[in-house]
Length: 84
Image (cartoon, rainbow, N blue to C red; front, side):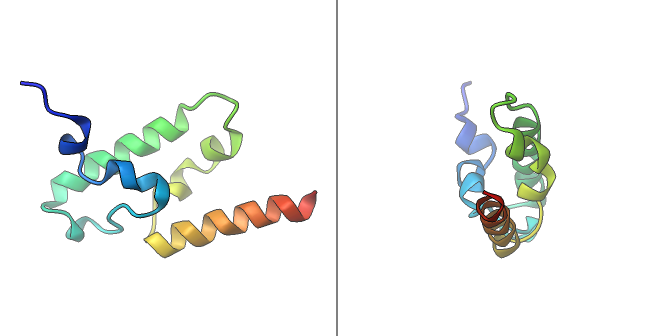
């Protein structure tokens, strides 16, 4: 039986917006969140070279709380702008 990606890994589509569940306890079950973070880390790590920052910081982009991921991303972008 076909199961859409969104049902197999709840919240995966929100991870790129730093709105994925920040802890495993906010999921229906701890097993439900683990695959989504693992898969997202794998996908970020295997992006083409046209996404160097995302590949380089895949672990940071998939760890921590919503606020930590947001702050990290903003600091990374502002740091890049400051160097220009």
